[in-house]
Length: 104
Image (tube, rainbow, N blue to C red; front, side):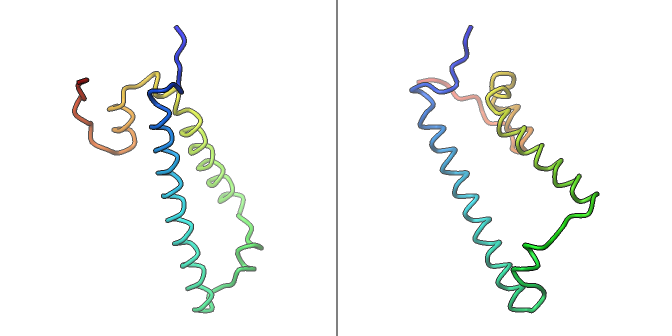
């Protein structure tokens, strides 16, 4: 049995998800710009310091592991949806289980 991830019933949901991610991304990017401006104003460091920054070997392993977890979560979302219920996915993400929705 084939599992259709994108069909007419969930394309709008996918669009909402993408817009929600874009919104969250913009909030984070905006806050990062504010923090960078404040750090420059306080003469803690400047933009060149960010560009020239190098991770230690340990930090590099940590950031790569974080990247791998994020990529796996995003790319693996279709598989997770097939293998887990919505409540299990939401609970794993730290949200309370949702009441079971009944079809009208």
